[in-house]
Length: 261
Image (cartoon, rainbow, N blue to C red; front, side, top):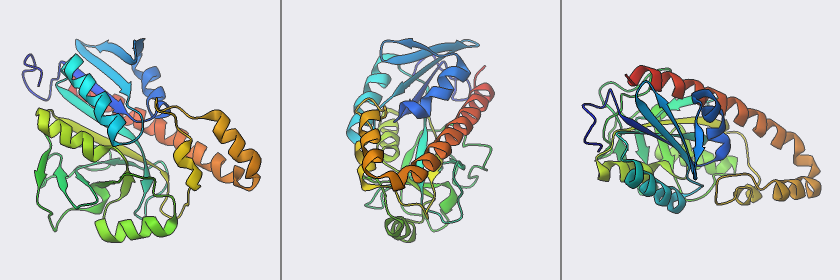
């Protein structure tokens, strides 16, 4: 942890991590972040904001996060981005403040105070993540599952929800939370649903993002040319993603304003 930080409520350096550029783009505009090498930076009331795109999946996310932690020595980390909905009650673009992260082995990492889970518009106060035993009172609406693949079918989403009781699923957060716990770094996690529990994704979607977290436009264009009946679905997902990114930017801006000097 940054030795200059007097406490977690007044961080001196905030690191924002997203897997995709589209997740970060509205935040870049909102916070006035400027490109510095592969990262983006700004200063807000004496607090340094550093943001970067990690790429998709555990390996890429961990490699980038380790570089960010070593280079900038943040005193607070925000992980945010899109997620697939598992809870049938969740609508697209719902923002989920996460208090528990689970992997497929049912290993559990807790964020914040278990006795005071976050409300929808008030994420957990940044605290160092910690591994805990599975708890019976863990609410699904503040729980996130991390797996090593896209949950692309309605049946797969239903099975994951029944087994793990998590509101949504992603491919990076558990690993980043474990790294933050190892480094003794306070962490806040926000995820926004892009595809609801009743929405199936094309299996080919796993190949639509390059290692830098940007869309392979040529690959997507070829897919649409050969699967024109999927145009409506992709337009719907794009609209959901744009709204989700905007809402994540709203929450992030408010969070930084409330927790920086």
